[in-house]
Image (cartoon, rainbow, N blue to C red; front, side, top):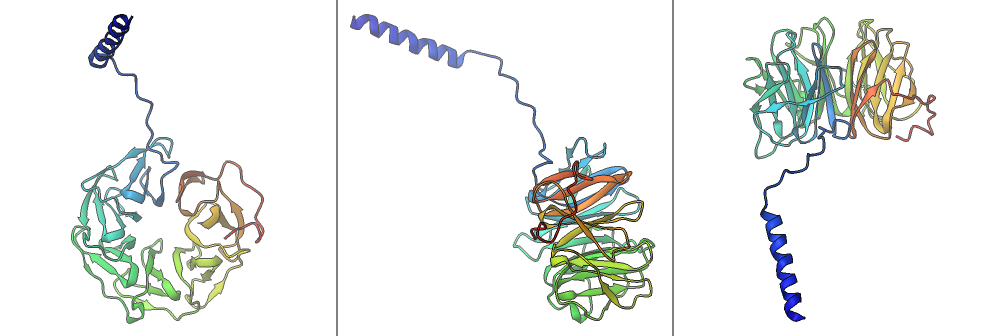
Length: 333
């Protein structure tokens, strides 16, 4: 009996060994996805008809069919650092994206491939905004008053001197008017710097608010809208004088914006909230997009449709099912 059991066990071992080393065709792999609906994205940009998104872990994706399909861009260095803001020049081929650790990447093929121009291996203040000036220079701004300028198309960078009022304040965004004549840098503790000579010189504006501004947008009327933390939105008319506080029904922080063809201003912010204004930014109503994410940016790809980036991935705009305008209790800032 013991002999039979032993022979049977040996046969099983031999069969298992033969099976383990026998050639076989592996099963097909499950379809893979870049996961654009789940990754954290901080910035969206248009390069002609191409839509690009960048964010956490150094991810840069692009889509040539208005967001239906996405491809991963090729980076010369994979630093896995957070990317914060992206911009393109008028040729729609040359672009710069900036992020943490002073990371600067440059593309000359509309975002298919990117080459590293700068990275601080020892760590430093993050860069949070990038802009292309009418002169051809590039300007990057960031935390603790960091500001840099490139005069050779983004290849090399040097310190940009700004007014003393900057001190160590975070410089959250640099934005230009449609004609490129007037520019704003907005930041921490109510800081607004204005240039009226296409970015060649900057002047600090009188303070009227002591909180942080996260972004700004030029108005079609010729004025400006600035916005930031806890629902603080302000409008300045084309005469460049006083700033008037907008009506916002809840203290929602906003981070990105777009403007539809009919003039409707769309702000995106925390708690998946959208701020909508049809009176030039004087007042806003609130609606909620999908989920409860922090919405970071919005880009329109055509016919008032586009995409919203967030810390929970990308989602189409307008949302598939809009809820009724939110009350201050429903905003959940």
